[in-house]
Picture 1 (cartoon, rainbow, N blue to C red):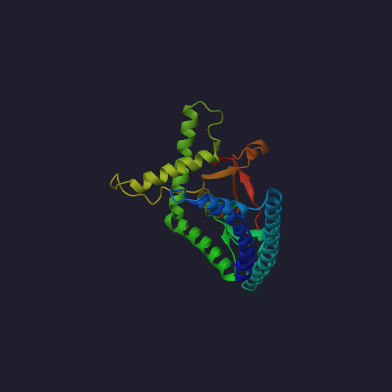
Picture 2: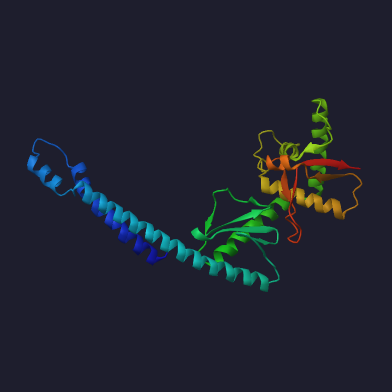
Length: 287
């Protein structure tokens, strides 16, 4: 918080301290053999009468609400200037961010804004790269630069850990295993694999691949596969499948609106900022 915010908040906070001071003195007074009734009577006399005390509390609470409203307004105004400056800088560098509500799509990364709190967070395919609660307080343009840089580094780390050939092999293996599992369970259209099942199978396959030929108690680097990382993997595979010469490749099916409404789909399309997002619910082999 800026110093003027602290000063305004402290002035109201002092009013609350003054209000509870007489009560605290009574609460903290110890009763002992040497205690005098007169001392407690004196403390009681300092406590405001009910109506006066209530009015004072209401007045202090009203002052605090007013300070909070003023601070929110000032933060939102300053935050807007910071974001505008950052967007202008990106455009000058050749990146053309697209504004969608309180979000800016800038390359593979989305920047979601909370102007009233002067906060921002980074998304990939509208999925948070950091924990959902990890909104970052933004006070300078550099804060936004660091946030986006961190997000891009996280995407690069996933790509380095999971090179293209490994992604293609594991996804195909996972799909085939999922089909066999569905067929054994008597599922209709076993070849139409739910994308959520593919995600689960992919996590298992990553662990198995890393443990292959290693000690069984090895500390795993691939145990974590958050949603955003898997979405990035699928986007990369989709790009490879459409630009390569694979005969057998996996394709993604959109599914019904009911399935999408139930959260059974994954949003793809984040690698190309000019491409619209689409939600896919199933995976199918295209031979």
